[in-house]
Length: 378
Ligand code: SF4
Image 1 (cartoon, rainbow, N blue to C red):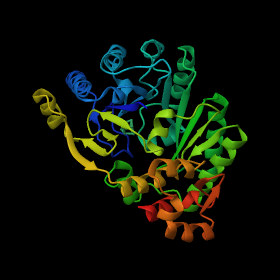
Image 2 (image 1 turned 120 degrees about the horizontal axis):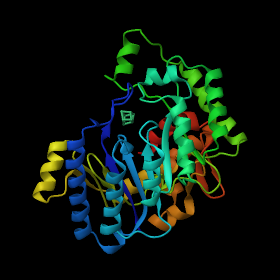
Image 3 (image 1 turned 90 degrees about the horizontal axis):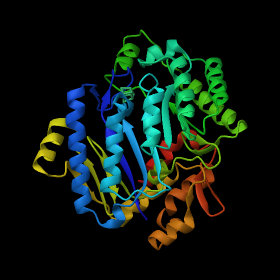
Image 4 (image 1 turned 30 degrees about the horizontal axis):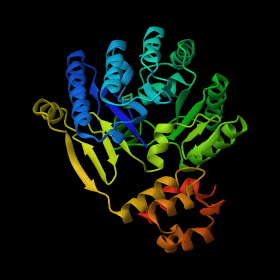
């Protein structure tokens, strides 16, 4: 089995009000230096990895805003992937894009470079709420980007949405879902806004300029999304992810199934069993490592079998079909019931998890308290 390759592009045109990811203001010279370093990192792995770990199954270019780069720069990144790794015909290649940073020409170049899945950060249909979030685009631009992507030949498009924004109502959220479904994307991701400390949005809430959505409204919005998307043939396959049949994101499924992936670039995380490791978060350290021909890894952990079992369970529980208990036995040589006896004795009678067709999964009541359940498995 091959690997999933994640490539991190830590540049954005402007920081969004809710974001606490590591990202730098777009700067052409810094981007150029970063892409040179990224190529060197690929070359290092190409020399050191065994052939089976150079066999790609998926690529995911995320950020930041990968599409703030020029089309030819992104083309070169993918060309390097083909050069240093083995690229099979059935590969899934996703790129994250922000509306306002793509046009028909860039999208066409991306398709030609082998990108076959586009994840578009729409977030919400209201320009006022987009302003609250500090996004650099309007809803009209998002609709235009989705249209251009289809014209450029993308047949697998994800639209990202956010709910629980200060000022958002149940009615406006429903209207947003209707507009999104009318665009008929293959995949929809729905995230509850997280108020991260020290972000401009957090400051505004703290100073009383904005009011957060009540928790019960957020829960009702989440449940509304689940019901509405189900009624429109979007299968919920993960806590935040919905897809038409056959369009689940293969790359992200690797994370939830706890199988191998390699992350390249600033702060990227990797899991090549039995090691989990991550790159430095300091861009100068990243550049220095690449100049010296050293991998930019800042932390590495040897994952023991008990830890791998815990991770496999709590990640697998994120999937709506849950964790295949037979596959668990085949992977670890022991039964879930024997390893996590106390947790199952607690959550099965509470109706927060259930066993269906040999799969252990969260119930409908377990979904909103998923984090509470996960904590008990680690
Ligand atoms: S585009 Fe994404 S990564 Fe960049 S600032 Fe906004 S939320 Fe953060």
